Picture 1 (cartoon, rainbow, N blue to C red):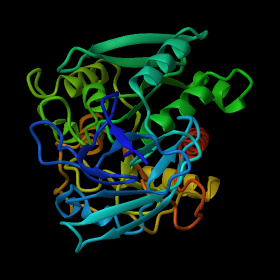
Picture 2: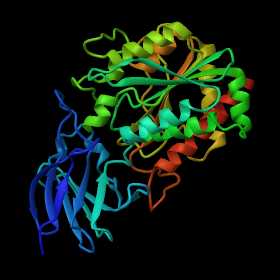
Picture 3: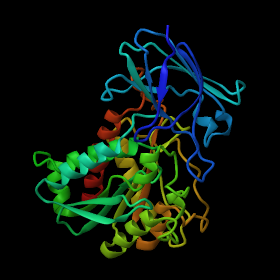
Picture 4: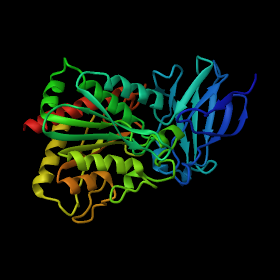
Length: 376
């Protein structure tokens, strides 16, 4: 039979083909431009119908997060709507660390990705369709390095200023699936949470803070290799215009509550990271953050508080990171939401692992928790 064909020349595509033999291939992930980061992959395989594929992604011992590969299963789709998980193994001793994906597609073309992608085309549809709804205002906060708009959707007429933003790290596509779920709730006139939240809050929603990296198939950086979530202390037009645009808009509105939405490669749980260690820390602010965590933990079994990142010591918070900078700058409750690339091991799903669908449902629980937090 003819060799399969592998291609990644599309929005968010990333793979290098080292060799192909029949239905087997050796592959490597391209690094982010001007950066050593790499972990995101997204490619299509043609000529695959009914054939047992063996796809070996090599050199992963030097990837950004080697600890993310054990226990991980690759995402696949034959229609680019439903994304399942397929048989995947990792051998750190093979060819510099090799992830082996095995799958037998029914269709002639099959897509594989580190997580279900959220394309720039879908992003533009989300922005356009949401902006056309009653009570929604669209703002272009500025442009990226390569001139793409930093879209912000504003909803609600209340006094509380709430900022929700995602995909500072572009390979964390679950973050924009979360945003889609959040915007669906906030624009649903039949949803009581929507109606009450819009009375209490003015929402500023940035679905994609790094469109250049998203389109390029980067894991963690923008078009010039900059990690945006290390730029919040002193963003510049040359390195991080995306952060500068968002932070300037925050300065205009003020911030009462902020959530920066991410994904974590290694930890198979959903968790929050707070702002412990900022110079302006108060016990009252810390208690308010902790109250939100407890509300969310009660509202959804997909969230937990046992596993997460180490907590910074007093006065040792990294103020280049958005959650710490925003909490310190505005004296508000801010947090980083982390979802897994793997699965939630407390509530695993064999078919999909962590998925777009669960990301969207989590957004609804996060906003319902926000309403309870505000009313408490």
